[in-house]
Structure formats: C-alpha cells, structure tokens
Image 1 (cartoon, rainbow, N blue to C red):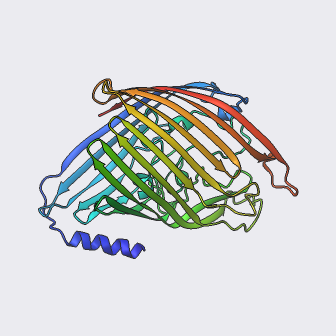
Image 2: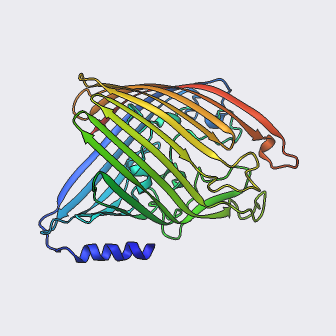
Length: 404
C-alpha cells in the first residue's frame, strides 16, 4: 500500500506545470483561556488534583500559532505547507505541520496532520458548543487513582491514543482525499509507525499514554503499518442538510515492555491487531442540528492473558445544537461508553456567544457517572482480587476564545 501512495503522488506531481507566481502567506493563531471547577463523590488522590495544590479548581490557557504558505500553478494545482507552533498548551489539537497538494485529482497531505479517520469522523461533539467534548480535560472519572481506564470521548487510536499528552503533533503519515462526486468523498491515511511522532526523530520510540494496556501489564502497544480512513456522504437542499460518515482504523500491534529492568506481568503476551470503526450522522434543519454516533474498538490492542476483566469497548452518543439569530448558540450532548466492563456516562449542556469577530465567550457544565472494576493493588493474581468502583462528578468550565 505504501508503494501505491508513492506512485500516486509521483503521477500527480508530474501531470501539472511547475510554474507558479509568488506564494501567498497566511498567519493565524488563537488563545483559549478557561476557568474550571470539578466536584467528585470520591476523594481525589493528589496526582489527580486540578493543579499542583488545588484539587477542585484551576485556570488553563492554550495558545497556538500557525503559518501557511501556498501557491497555485498555471494548471490550477494548489500546493503549500503548514507549520504549527504552540506557545502554551495543556493539550491542544489545533497544531499540525504538513505539506499539502490540491488538484482536480484530489488532495494529498504529508507530515503530522490528523488522519483521515479523525478529520472525516462525525460524533455528537463534532457540532457542540464551548469545549466541544473537552470536559474530560477537567472531569476526573477515577479521582482516587485506582488505575481504571474509562473512555470519555470518541477519540480513535491513530491520533489521540498514540499522541503524548505533553506534545502537540500526531504521528507522521501520508493522506489522500478524493474530490467529492455525487455527494461522496473517500479518504485514506498510511502511518508506517505510530512511534514516529511529529516531535520526535525517526529513531525515537515515543512513550504513549492511552495505548498502555494498563499500569499493571508492563506493556506499551505501538502500531505499525496502519491505515486510517473513511467515506462520507453529504446532501444539502434549501434549509435541509444531511451528512453520513463511516470511518475506521487498522494496523499491526507491536507490544513492548515498559521497562528494560522490570519484566511484564505476563511475558510473551499476544495482542490483537488494531481494528475499529465509527459510524456517525448529522442532520441540519434551519437553525437546528442533530448528531449521533456509534463506535466499536473490536478488542483492538487487547490480550486475553493481560486484559482479564474484559476486552470489548463500545461507545455511542447523541447531540443537538441550536443557533439563535442573536449570535447565541446552545448545545446538549449525551455520551456513553463501556470499556472492558467500565461504564461511563456524561451529559453536557453548553452555550457560546459570538461577541465580536474572532471572540467567543462560552460556558458549559457536564454531569458524569463512572462505574467499573479494578484489580486490588493493580496486580494480576490467581485467582484475581476484583474490587468495585463508583464515582459521580460535575465539571464546570467557563472560558473565552480569541481566533485571528
């Protein structure tokens, strides 16, 4: 498949004129400042405080900056590059560095952009107000730090789950999007190695957060020769609009020990390859928008020897948004997940107001509930000692965005 990508790109470049005028330079950026408050039914471990010394409240700011240079040949092919820089960030996903080529044959992206799976996906948070699903940066589903991994969003594996939370860019990849025809569009990304992240050298093995099977397994699971893509269908007529998206990921699991000195709990454990899909839809009618999605991880990157409490993960959710003519918008979303027997539910009510060009104050409140199981002392024993876990919480976020 990687030969197909290389050959296709060579044909695209050779079929167009190389002559172009002066490039167009565009500078863009923004700042998002937030204040958050969280309350949980369980006592928080100091590691899960909102800030170093405040367990339930804090401030957060994220600033991003991007430069884009693009040009057009005589034949109409557009090409250019995007360079994303972050100045202060808790966890921003707006930053990407890539080279792009757009022509009548479609669009190519090369670099550390988000995958086609991530860009084409439709979820209840796709059209939500305020943080649009970012409540989980504040809410603590496991405040007591038992080691349970609850799934709190529709993120896939190729992008967020193989991205170090302290870094911004995603793994390096090649992506192709077809032109739209009769409402359909296809996209496909090829990722040789998820450890080859945008902030690392080719030989650097990036240490991930989410792909770890658990703290007790002793394994990290990387992904090699991965593909992420999808298909969308769009229909618009007068005040009505409909969009359907089916996206998925696949790739070979590459487990490795977390430490060279401490052996894994189950040496030689076999892990299932990456296979996941998400189907989502959005219906627009005048000022109203309705969204829904369902996702299945299909036991991706799990091991029967390690994941003894469960291997399946399924997510679903619904959302509605209303855009008032006064520049005020409001949304309500419901999210639910069942990951390896650990269940999470979250309801978010959000609002935002376009105060001026580029200025967007917003507020939201999320009510979440977690119910799961964990192994005592985070150890695999025979027989296993399993303990229950329950938590209810509320996360309130107030903020303001400035985009230019």
